Length: 439
Ligand code: UGA
Image (cartoon, rainbow, N blue to C red):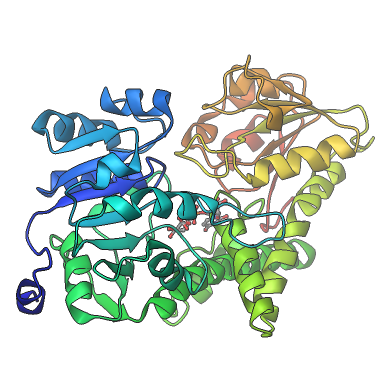
């Protein structure tokens, strides 16, 4: 390391770190850094969120996060403040964790990055390192440096690969650390953020680091669209996609993960980043047909699932009650942003179905706009009762324990492979599993 960094007066040991943005990335990142001995100050504009966090309450469902918050808040090494200017005062490392949502044209909207940079520019200590963890288009590190207009401050890219629901574990034990910095001494400083991890480091220029993040999510999306296409093919041919996934996944060149078919890939990252990568490629006049195809396959998956539901109801979906199990984009999170479950619900509603849904993270009285048109049930049993067809859209473990025998048998389509098929069939339910024969 760190000789170079020490020589240049850059921070190397435990540091005063500012984290800008207390979202899905900022909070676990800050808490893990504080737990590793750094002195961390987080800037969060939203007063309610800030108050909850300062009291140790996590605004998001993340395993182990509240325990970690309690420990690090008690140690005094984690604090929440209202302004970015306050957070960066005296900080040697500043980590940008603000949101970069999809803009109207599919490009990442950098407004929050620009605002944060504007707020911190005059308050940064000389020699500070500003690190971008937010997923940002190629060239953003240079843009941040330009906007800061502080030649005495360093800027680097350090994309995050945290999965929702596993963010604490992923922040603590990353499978790799990607650092984009033009100056090796600055890369050393960024590497000091992960000094407790023995993960391989990929140290490169900022542009490559920024692109690695988009390429990773696009590759995952491509793998998922591939297996979802194979599930459709298995449905048509009477083959078994579970066995197919194992049969290809045991080849180490392919690997077994991200080969479970489902109602499509969603969440706040994959869809946003795939769209952003398409824009980045278009701006560079490069075609990325595999990325385009991955998205097109995903865009049609909800209709495919709705059609499979329709095929299980002899009189069609118009006016039929459909019991939906699961609304979040995956299990172990309360997040419904870009949820494929909601895309399926919309496809069912468009076919005239009456949707009665249960999700363990959604209260029956919830009036959120994305749930319009859904009759919310307070339990899986209540969603199932009297339904013509039930469709499982999120892999909540409790859906494996549904008491099918307590309901009048109908049909169930399991898009996630979680239903206890033997139990449901024994209770005379007609069971269809996406990509599996016998339905
Ligand atoms: C994703 C990436 O996995 C993280 O590495 C990345 O850091 C993060 O985006 C981000 O950019 O911040 P996440 O959004 O939490 O993480 O979601 P995933 O676990 O990747 O799942 C994405 C979607 O694929 C979900 O709808 C999930 O249900 C679906 N999926 C996943 C499947 O249908 N089958 C699988 O085998 C795996």
